[in-house]
Image (cartoon, rainbow, N blue to C red; front, side, top):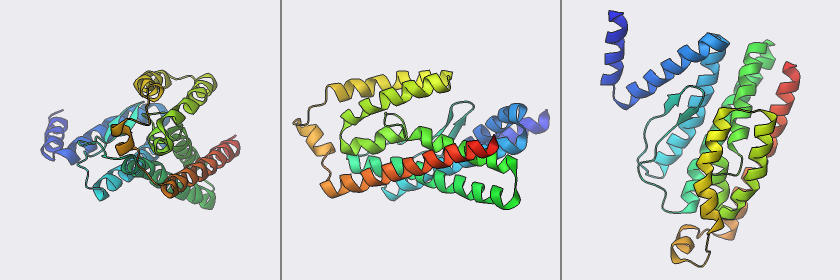
Length: 235
């Protein structure tokens, strides 16, 4: 008991990194009780890769950002201390998480196929599904922040997708996300493209919108195929 307390105090002394390690270890301990430590470690590792995508992108845009924080059965997140000044920056930071997360899941998938490991295949599936789910075009999910560059009213397309997912795989987390999305949907409903503040924030060129639109659709299509294909392999 005393050793554990000393270890916790040591983590707190590490500041931001200590907080990340502490919340990561707590999540690992809880997930390990349910899924086993190997799967838990792989899943948390892919969560970390996803969040580091956001972290690196935010640093590239000179945005002050916190280290990742993990919450069991919720996931992980980083906190931007200053919000992006334009929609292109927001889309860049948002897209980096699913992009790097997909690369991480793909590497685990290739590792699983090479070693014929069902455990690694299950971890890869969780990574594909996690990043695919995050692409639902509904704020505060990454997909909502990515597609905002096309216009905030595109978030209404995410509503039927979220409802379908809630019917397919009911989860308290989905209801929490749905509630968190209500202010964004209200903002989209009241969106005035002629307002000066909206013109300044959403001022992205047509070429930039096409670039992010193609990237979003391509990544979503790839993740949909990999999620479904990996799920069938596991069955």
